[in-house]
Amino acid sequence: MLSSHSQRIFTGLAMLVALCAVMALGGWYVFGAALLVALLGLLEYYALFWPGRQGIGKKAIGLVLASCIFLAARSQNMELLAAVLLASFWTANMFFLFCYGTKDRNASFANAAVLFTGLLYLPLSLQLFLFLSPAESALVLLATIASDTGAYYAGCLIGGPKIWPVVSPKKTWAGSFGGMSASVVVSLIIGLGFGNTLQTPWWIWICLGIILNIAAQFGDFFESALKRRLGVKDSGHLLPGHGGIMDRIDGLVLVLPVYFAARTLYPLFVN
View 1 (cartoon, rainbow, N blue to C red):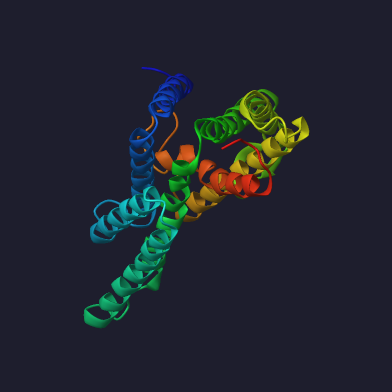
View 2: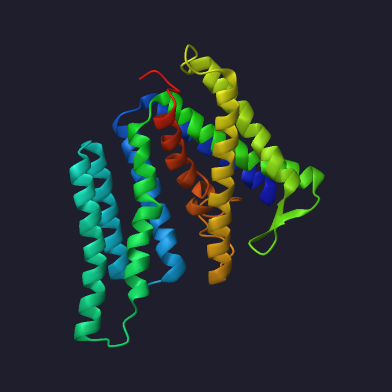
């Protein structure tokens, strides 16, 4: 039986190989992989609120709507994507309305909110991968992985004061700076190797690495707070040594929109 740390390493390596293969193949493979991760993560998100066989209907509706979000994004029709999001919002609202009006006068609007926010949290964030170049995908993914890995090992080796023990009792300042350093190194290597070097000076890549790391940390903190509030240790058990899908992409779902904001402000890569 492998130790938890060994499982973490082997699972991490397997995921890295799978990521490299998907990025090399591109096209529909990226679409399929991103959609699969979004659907699995969404199921874990819903299971935090509706464990087991609870909320099967709501879970099924969420998966269908998540697939529609990805298909709309694939079409690159922003009007269609906006329409799908509005349809998702009103589908959740109608679910509450009919529950309240036909069978349950104590129906909670929180169920509708969970149904809709899950779509914003995971599918809407992960569909941004469809608009990234291979170099951008590598930057976003590797900066997130470096942030997590650097924080884990720096925290284990150095320890020290905790950052936010109420939210995440194990995370330390040493781990935070270790993850930030790793993210900056990744950003510099990819940026100077594949970025728009004629218009983007080296210090921009350092700033980008810092910003992406901060986003990854707050994405991690959010999921930690959510799990602690709901009394759950891991979002799932799909990835040995890591927990669930959400436990691996909690930082990524915030890194993606932050990166998109950064690239609209500065010409990081030549399209």
